[in-house]
Amino acid sequence: MALDLGGVDLGPALEQQLFFALRDGLPAARGRGHAAAEDGMALARTGGAFALSIAPRSRPAAPSNSIVALIRDRARLTILGPIEDAMERLASERLAMVAVGRAADARRGASARTVRIQDLLTPTFVAPVVRFQLGLGGRLGSVEREWASVVDRADVPALRRVSARELPRIALGTAALQSLVARWQPSLLISFDEVGTWSRILPAVARAHGVPSLNLAHAEAAAPEAIAGADYDSFAVFGEWAAAVLREAGIPADRIVEVGAPHFDALIARPRRGQASGTSGAAGNGAAIPAGEPRRVLFAAQYVQGAMTQAGLAAGYRALLAAVAAVAPAQLVVLPHPVQPTGQIESIVAAAPAPSGVVVRVEQRLGLHDVLDDAWLLATAWSNSVFEAAIRGVPALLIDVMAASPVAYAAEGLGIGATSEAAALDATRALLDPGFRAAAVARSAAALARHLGPLDGGASDRTARLVLSMAGRNVAPSA
Image (cartoon, rainbow, N blue to C red; front, side, top):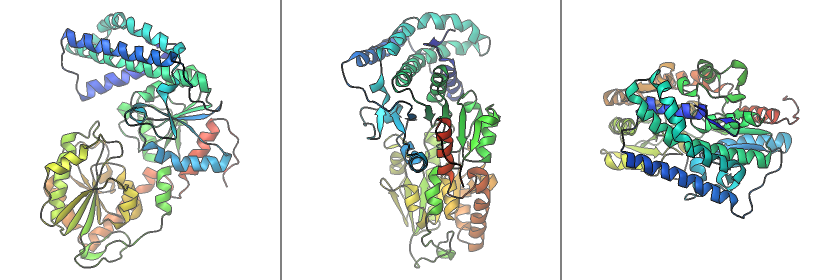
């Protein structure tokens, strides 16, 4: 199937969406009327984009040769902060940030630091999208026989529906990014996506226009089968573990650079506050808390996607409630995932009443780093919050009731694994023993280096040097 749009191959982005559909479940059959309505909405969306592109207005500008970062979630701005500080110190350079997806949602408003990608659209690149969509039916019809040779024939109609839904969005995103490149002439394109549609669009547009591309890690790489096919010129990863995942995904080793985790630099350098110890509540540094003071337990809620389902998140929370009741009095602080849909974890909390002796609070203002040092325990399923807990000497409980974890953090000692409510209860009670607790903290600390690289607080500097080098800037060698 010909999927070229202005010299950019849309095939990898479509393959990614077909992979997700086959992995997560193909859409149910819909009537012809529904399909026609979806086609109409897609054309209307493209028509609206074309109208926006020709409307008389001033478009956001950036200096030619800028280093451009695509921001899909505004939480990524926090990750970029220390990297940008290092760039400014090393080369008086700052990023041009462009909001896409959720971060560019007009209803929520983009950050003051970002330009919305739709505001950069130009008719030169949007007009071909209209022609592409009008010919899409014929393209899809010609490829159905090819699909039938590699998947179950019964799945072919569903794959066609996925393609008809996703290709217009892919084409429009490609046109928007092409508009950006033509207008701003960037020296480097950066994203935080090794998985997903933008992880395929950005490298394809960059390669077609001769611009280098870099993927920065927002978390530790996982799921090599989903990463396979990402075509950035370079991938900055935390440490040895993530590098191995990328190699398993087929990424050439010379494109992988281990830099560490920049957003942990400040946490590594932060002075420790007192934490609980002994049978009345212990954590890493052994400072006692007053008798009878409630133990503070943190629940780092994960984003519902892939292996983490809504049911799995709810089951893990209910198991934690029962476990925390065993060490009451306790305060359970629930930390919503930074990019969760509004109310996702809040609805789960509301549906599960707190047991006697446990006070539950959903923390809407402070982040994990702000509350970690006062914690007796951190609980999650398999999120990267286990790294922060290990850095600060707080034990982690990894509750995976669905046994769905794509990583082996518990086996490595980064946390205590529990695949049932009973196991979570036993582990939490065991942490009352100072010896057991100290051993758990020591195991997690020992496992950190493989995942995060050197814990020297220099990850931001290493990442900034990689960014500047790829953009062709001259920077003095590190000391």
